[in-house]
Length: 376
Ligand code: NAD
Ligand code: DAU
Image (cartoon, rainbow, N blue to C red; front, side):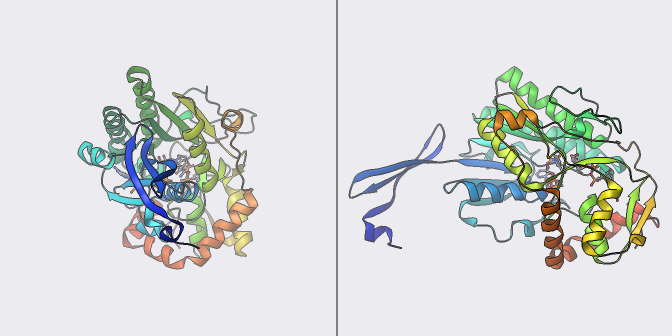
């Protein structure tokens, strides 16, 4: 490949901020060859499971992108999740979304916010909800306020189907964008409150917002407090798999990269003030999921251990993604079989990642959550 000097192209001869972001102009022998806009996104929670996958997607999809990645690195945030990233367009900022000064600095030069940062685990919210209220509610309001004052062009709030509560088992009812809110756990209530604040920022202040609501994600780099990676990590170590209640609760599973592409489609094509449900039409009972994991890993059914149910355990989630499909032109690409195989393979080949996250703090959490019931 020829260098810029050999071709006569002067390296980025001019760069300035425009309404759409950082604009670069390329000159050749003094003549303007091309102008392109370098967009700068603020992704929050980008060292967590889904946020880090989204950062990878942005850097892969947009050659001229800048991504500021603001994350507090709680127990769930992990710089190992960013290993191998092309750091050229990526800046990691260690900080709190509930701190207005930090957010203001992080937003410098950005035109878009995508808010993934959250406390995300239902069981932890049942044990203690205080951090859920602080990060998920106060943090979202701080982001909205600073974004508005700084003239941010679009604010994407990554939300969850759990804000709509639980569907009856064995029915053909689905969550749509019109479904009423009925959050049942402190986590879901905090995400519902955050959605209300986003809606209010749009309605009252005219901030351009989009909300996405997704179901259960699975894929590489998910913290093993969540059911699927917990099962995989335990089974790989021949430790038992705790199944809450009768194991017949239904979740609607989607591969993490498909969710991220849906968030990107909403960011690019969503209506201002719009809400989009993202789902892969992939309802599965927990027991069925556990059996699939055991089958792929060739592990015995005796590893399954039925334990006390989660208090207030939602029975069924099922998403109707028709609106996102028709309005955003988005569709998941991964099948359940291909996504599960990729996920399990990732955990099999990343034992070092597993060892590092299953540290003493994790083991302490596990002991508290499961007592002797879910013990290995
Ligand atoms: P995660 O727990 O893996 O990651 C959350 C990230 O947020 C972590 O990196 C953590 O350090 C960071 N964080 C927490 N508090 C923060 C704060 N105050 N300031 C800055 N960063 C902070 O969560 P996830 O599973 O990747 O979920 C990401 C988002 O997607 C959440 O908003 C969650 O509600 C939503 N969501 C998750 C799922 C799912 O199945 N996991 C489904 C639908 C929606
Ligand atoms: O639906 C979207 C939501 O999915 C996200 O908003 C949340 O952030 C995410 O954590 C997830 O919530 P769930 O509570 O559905 O996920 P979890 O992995 O904790 O549990 C999935 C199912 O498995 C649920 O029915 C509870 C059950 N379960 C979970 C654990 C941790 C067990 O049976 N045993 C377990 O040990």
